[in-house]
Length: 166
Figure 1 (cartoon, rainbow, N blue to C red):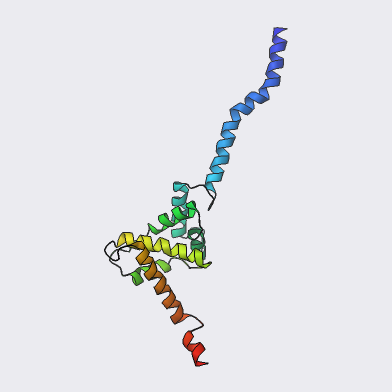
Figure 2: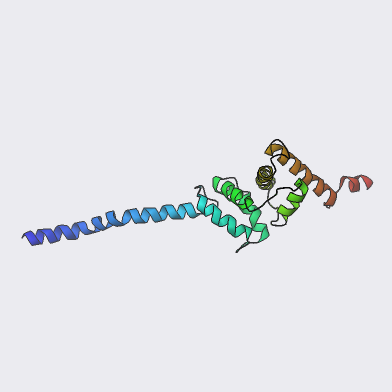
């Protein structure tokens, strides 16, 4: 009788025991998947470093993909941007030289806010490499945006002078 009761309890409780043993493993796998999501809400420094390295070396990515990953408005993309820009050394460069160097590694596409975020990453890195250049990274960012606007006006398809001349 004792053996029958023990076997009955074992068979009834075995799925519960198994569930208790495997649930922590399953849950940890779920959290790893959640943290590994590119541009997700969880911020994981190591995943950001890996993605930034792949973006910089264009390992499985095109230049047009880089700005999409750097321009998102979440913690993970901010970390990817910091890590990506850490590959650049803008020391002893003027801001236009640094901007040209930076833009040879990516195609700046996307909505205005996304482009702005990419340029914020650039401005912070430029300021970090050249602390004597301007007083704040906001000043660097303002100058960077002005350079981009002037370049667009100079080389864009529609020009104010062309419109006035018509």
